[in-house]
Image (cartoon, rainbow, N blue to C red; front, side, top):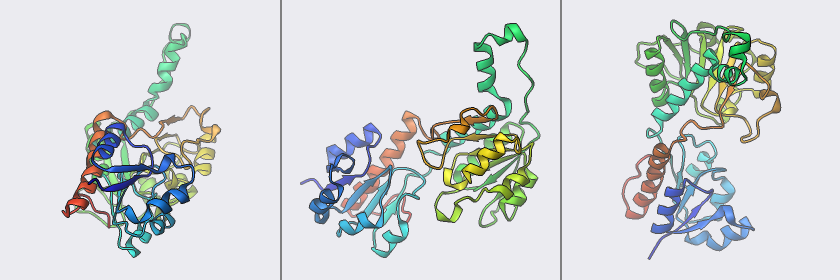
Length: 311
C-alpha cells in the first residue's frame, strides 16, 4: 500500500514523476479549496514534498500526523522551521548537489557585470561595432578583492573560482572560520575592503535587508554587488536608487524581493545584469536536488535516518 504525501508546488518533472509513482501524491497546488483539501487529507499525511511557497504553521496544524517536510532547495526560509520544531516535525533540504552550479552562476554574474559582456554583445548585434568602433573598455577581475558574505560550501566554491580568475578573497560570517582568507566582523567593514561584495547568506528574518545603505555606501562608486542568495537580503529600493545614481558601480542579481516581480526601474539600468533565479537551473543539478528530496521521504517511511536534516 502506497503512503500518502502532499506535493506543495509543481516540482522538477522527473522528481514529480518519481514521487507520483512511489507514493499516493496529492497536488496541493491544484486544489481549488486549499483548506478543504488539507482537512480531508490531514490525518493521512506524514510527509510533505515542499517547494515554491513552502509550508507555514497553519498548514502544519492542518496535518496532525505530519513527520517530515522535505524541501526542494538549499534555502528553506519559506518553511516555518520554528513552528516545525515546536511540533516535532523534521525538515530537510537539498544542499551540496547544487554548489557548483550556483558558484558558476555567481562567477558568471561577476564577469558579466564587470566586463559588460551582455551589453557588448547587444552593441555588436545593433551594428555599432562597424559604425561606432570598438566597445568601451571595462573592468578586470584580476587583482580585485571579492568579499563573500556567507562562506559556507557554496561560498567556498565561489572563492575557488574567483581565485582562479586572479581575485583575492575576504569574508564575513557569523563565526570566524579556520581559513586563510581575511575575516571581517560585519558587512560594512567587508564592503569597505572589497571591490565585489558577493552575497551567499541564507534568507529569512535574521538577514532581511542585511545589505542596506550603510553597506552600499561602504562599497562605494567603484564597487560591485552580486547576489545569488535571496532577494530579501538586500534593501531592494535602496539598491535600485544607488544603481540609478551611480553610487555603486554595478550589480549582478539572480534573486529579487518578490519573485517573479522585478521593479521596472531595473530593466533600464546599464550597470546591472539580471538573471531570473537560475543559480541551480540545469537538468543535472535539478535532478540531483530532486533525488535528495525523494530520498529523504523514502528514508522516513523506511524508518532510516534522514539524509539532510535541518531540524
